[in-house]
Amino acid sequence: MNKIDDYAMATEIIEEVHRARKKFPSAEGSMCALTEEVGELAKATLDESPQRIRREAIQVAAMAVRVATEGDPSLDAIRCSHGVMPFSEWHDETPA
Ligand SMILES: [Mg+2]
Image 1 (cartoon, rainbow, N blue to C red):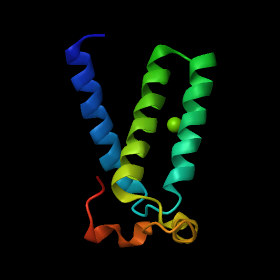
Image 2 (image 1 turned 180 degrees about the vertical axis):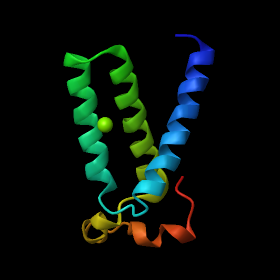
Image 3 (image 1 turned 90 degrees about the vertical axis):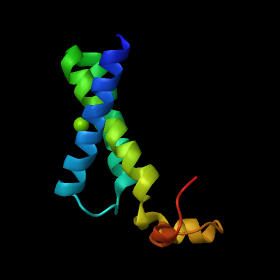
Image 4 (image 1 turned 30 degrees about the vertical axis):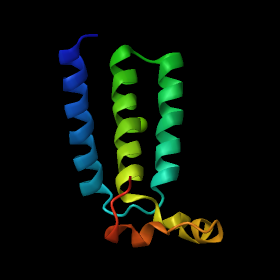
């Protein structure tokens, strides 16, 4: 894989993020969705074509971007019990 392929894949990840936000606007449950996608990628690596592996990897990366940028408000109660800022208050801060 060369640098051009890396940039093409990064573009596909961004497009997948936009597609996912349009289809599922809420960030609720995004951590579970990421975990589900990781499982699909693992299965693809065992049983499926390179194209399917690439597709699943893009979906994993897109969900990781969503978790990093939107959080998962369904985990707010747990985050509060751990003494950290709930995701629902992230709109006032840029995650570092
Ligand atoms: Mg998938």
